[in-house]
Length: 392
Image 1: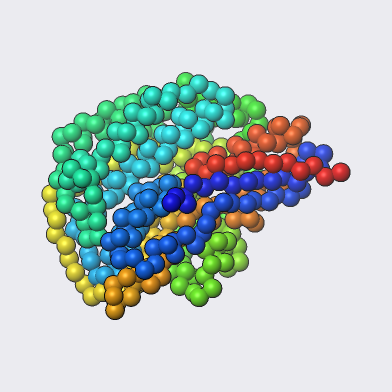
Image 2 (image 1 turned 45 degrees about the horizontal axis):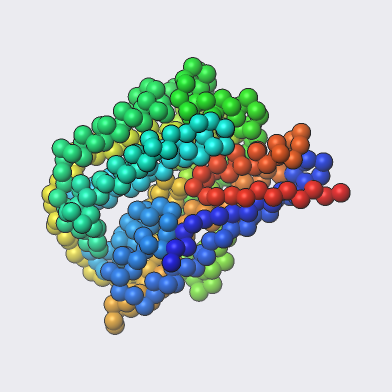
């Protein structure tokens, strides 16, 4: 069973090619985590990556962290570093896939499938270079046996490939671009695939619409979200989450809002695309910096079990929350709830709807292109079908 293959239908209600209303429908089964109830914590953690196709590493780590908090387990610093590296590897894989495949498709550019396959296979192999041959992590932490030499050399090779294919300057140099003018110069003078896509969308006017400013989830205390997920009637919150009655957003732009050139943007789709490039550059630098903290160390520390745990992971797509309650009588899961980035970003009255209402284009096809570009800017991991209903 796999319920994580997100797909949305975006219906634009128009009059004379002007968007008057937007309807967003998702195929996600938001309470699917109930399938974990009745299982042991170890069974549930092994099952979670099979249950969700998107951000499988982030889902697994959120499950492990929630269980560890509930059971009073504290993994060693080495295990925390190992998990952080694997989370970064997943983020780098997702970003490069979207930048070199999805961006190319939408902008009508050629794509290199073999290059992406190599990048993804290499990054997915890191688990076995960090843990034992089984590549298995578990509650409390799997057995660490890092192959530092191969891990460093493989990542160095990937860094060179990504730098050539995407940035054509070092990731650090891109992340340090000081202002909007420097970014515009990079777009104009760089012949990488992402730069060509950005140029195309600018020239076609597909990235020009101004998005509203919404609150980011990083402003909220984890215990407040856990409290909402604990409620007996939590289903409406998990399906259509809001904060103080207002939809919010999560993802790369929210993580990097303070970046100098993003502060100078007017919240157009271009700012969302550029935030993903910054995010990738920062992830590459972060991975390299943290490799040195990886070592053999399988210590496990204990504290008192509370039998309830909450984990909040910043996945590549945004904030992911897991909440678990464990029955102390038989050590099985009494309640399990998950709140994923999709529900925040594609809320029926959320930022996508607000951004698209009022948009006018020369024809229906242009409207579809603007909508597809907007979805790709907001959350590239979600498949989307755009429908247009013209009102007389």
